Image (cartoon, rainbow, N blue to C red; front, side, top):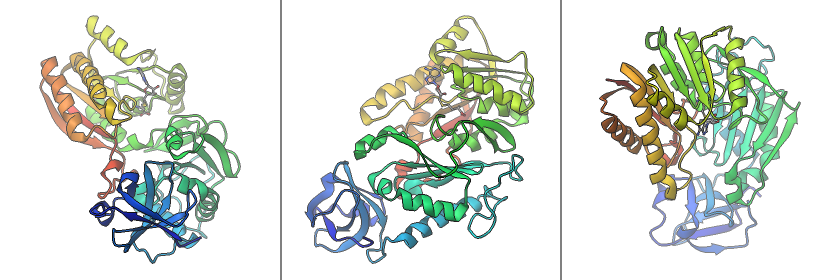
Length: 420
Ligand code: SAH
């Protein structure tokens, strides 16, 4: 069905977010349901008078009862609609220079099969869900492989068609569905990882980012395999002018991406900390993959808080500290505790920096705003007795765009600070 046969009538005065192009309709805003839509079906969103405002997918199991696809109630949500949205998202990445080596729209060349790509970046986000007008759909490119994540029922029901359209547009070697994300539970969906098209990807592949090579496991790696959202921040921090000859501490290193940039920028010594030993093993292999043989570097498997405390107690100092912790706040109730965690961490890091050193600090908790995060780091600086200049505000990479009408899409924030 390409046009809705049912409608959600909003309560009086609850239509403003829809007029403002916010893509979510919460169950509390709905006055009446007309018709008998099945979960995942299209519904019209109407104002209190029954006047159609938008077309959405419906999921009665979720607090977000509808996800708006189009604010033109007359626009059919047919295969051509989905194709237009996908093409628009793909073209926006090409316009960022992220796909210079491949004309992405068929019938032109395929995704490159060669291990030595012309483009310095072969892994990036092609579709960023709501921000690309495709609520619940994430598509990342890793070389000749696409990884899709279906976060909502509306997308899950259409994923075969979407995978076919992606295959037609980009002709990848394979498409893997990595729908092993907890939020699917809120949509009544189970977690799964399954090949959707073409060849199943290999257990490990090599991607390039700004000319650096990284090993990625798209089956089991974090997110869809790699923290693509940190690309621009790695480039901002990983500059020779900032790092050459410096002693760098990379905390929450995962597979050592910031570490590889630091090595390339001529850092004197790099210490990488992560609680995951396998991640650090990959970090070591990523260094070797880029031709770095650095016997003085350290890989420390352990709890970041404990390691930082140990360094403080033993008087260890660094010139640069990168802090990229996992998400601390998963819901509103966790925000306060998360902020205490960020403050402790930043306090510890600030204590380890030599005067004039650099702190690159991040939070990927969407519920902690950039403003709040800056206040938390300020609190840590006051307690640590350090003055911090913001050299550069940091955020999610350009292929993870933020939709103005959907500020929830801004989740990664950071600061590059010089510490006196
Ligand atoms: N900076 C990385 C991404 C970091 S993701 C990059 O650019 O790719 C967060 C990392 O923190 C994960 O690798 C996870 O294993 C690690 N982690 C989570 N809790 C931790 C803890 N308490 N101490 C140390 N590492 C931790």
